[in-house]
Length: 242
Image (cartoon, rainbow, N blue to C red; front, side):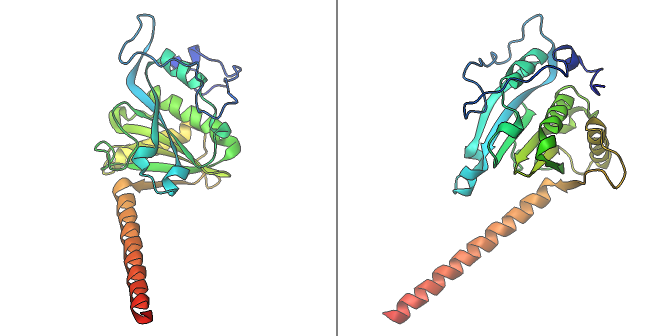
């Protein structure tokens, strides 16, 4: 039974519909035409919030590029119909190259820890086996755009980090100090993904973004210190040999 049978999205595609896929290396087919920004047709069902799909290739980041510069805006949707039009032309996550991040965020919020809407928030994260990734991603983003998390404007977006064999799904929100919202997001995610509450269910981890930012800053400081020490040692060796 479809757990979203009460959701307006169920009217647009049944569980038996096969999602479109493409053999080209792009995340989205060239035949897709993005919707006109902010224009909603009279026979369309507007979303509570517009949403933007993003993708980022981690390989580019590892080569020294700034993460912000590696993100690509795939498209923004304003209605249920636009959501399905864009989503049906995207490859399923299991068909995308590893070391990519696939993201869906409210329009105007970039998927960065430092973003004003994100910096005081946090994220619930769970590791996902590749064979379950497509289902978890689809159910999660459908629930978010369909307002199924029941926390109002608290949600910012969802990040799927593809790292075969274990992918990582994260739900980002605005205010880590709001313990009631933190718990409700966890409970909603378990309900949406049909998890049990027992010890056998997938492990979910919560972390405030400022904690992650502090650890990242410590790593950068430590790395810079090692580089300075290496440079100093090299200078000393050069002087000794001259």
